[in-house]
Picture 1 (cartoon, rainbow, N blue to C red):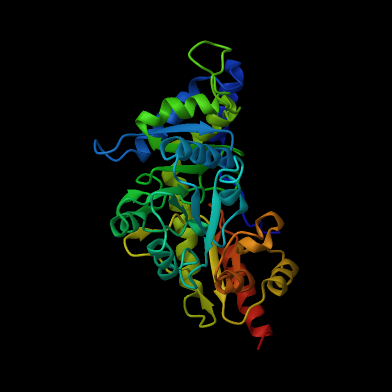
Picture 2 (cartoon, helix red, strand yellow):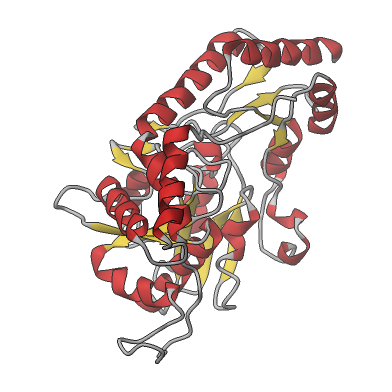
Length: 372
């Protein structure tokens, strides 16, 4: 079976995990945590114009939750979050944990699979920007041009779920680096991984507050806690694996680029297939390669690919599919439903071989032919 994803873990990367074990620093303190946060901070800072700090977390959901907590502290008047209609459930959940925010969903765009910008802008025009924030999610790694939205809507507070965006850019900057705050995920299927893990990206002066929240709300006096906090800390072993991944991140990202390029080359002449369209001045993170079939049905396609020993996955479900989110206002959802039904996410891991991609593409052609 060709899996939809598996991480890139060579002996060099794993050697850092062994080093962390040998050091006996296996919990939430250790040199690798410091090293990783320094590396990520350098990646996500924007020269001297904006110095960002990156704090590691135990997973991407926790990171997004702390983005929500930071937003609440700095903008206490904001009570509504505009969200996409078709993303992974954690992006929505993170704003519901503290029962402060209401959500309003905007349908997807049939081409980018991200926000329908016309609908988004109509909603923003009728919203009070003093009480409203925007959540941007980069679906499958297709980057939304956040700087353009910031120029178009001055005063709008934007936060990013950049969990699928590592390696992607908007207007030459790393996605996740220019919004109020953003979250990263290092789950096992992400471009850079440590099994579980995440991080918050925010301007340097927010680091102290985020550090407090991440560490049970502890004050400057050990074991005295002056705010509700969480145990959202990454372990040194996780950080060691992540350090190894970051040491070879250019290799991983280049391998992912080659996978995407070969898919594009082999599929581009199939008229029944559409790719994600990129926003202007953005670069896809090349996380997951998705296709949209003009006359496809995901459930049928999944069975067909499975019979050929290929694992695939669907595009995310619309927000109203989830029982606890059925009351979220969403004026339109037909495009999100269409994408969920017609899109197929293909195997996209770094070490996917050319002959495997050819087998996947040939299976795709056979499936399309079977529908005629």
